[in-house]
Length: 267
Figure 1 (tube, helix red, strand yellow):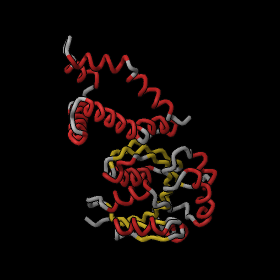
Figure 2: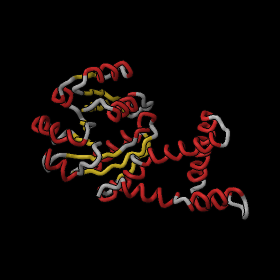
Figure 3: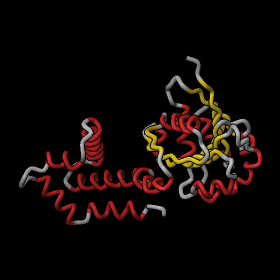
Figure 4: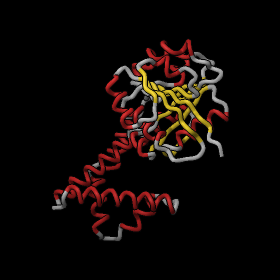
């Protein structure tokens, strides 16, 4: 089967832009061939990225890389999106080119004000596991037809799981996924500290906690189970697990998680 070549222009070679590029360049599939171009004002960042991914094209000009691109990914800080949009918006062919923004907090209405109502826009919130092709990518769109939604979803599904949702749900899901990866890592760090206090080496504690979480995930995914069901199987009456859970709850575990998620929820 002949591969379809997609030209992707990524504006911004920071952490997330670089992670997307590395993930796409390393995707092993037969559907797409990617012609990846990236721009950044920092030549050192471009050089480092090209060293890691030799088969990309780099430039310091946004206008150069976006010419004839099928998909333009804005991977810059939120406060730079308007500046970037002003520089390229008059040269975009809105009949053919798709614009994807991964800038948190910049909603579709704001993007429309930058690019105009004719623009096909996607707002995508991935997380940092995208380089490992294990991201959660939350996707909302403006003016995109079914074919365009399928194209963008198919590309980002190479980097993990994608969820197309109304934009009204996007920020809440961003707290669960994009911010949530830090919260998951915070639990791992806390569990490692607990292990060290009990005399376990940090390396061994990390390996055990990671494998335990992978097992918990497998229980939920493979059996389509609910956390409450699996917790009940472990918490025998009078046992050590229920005592540990009760102590965590007494110290505000669930409440702390919910409050943390709500605090990171942009309204």
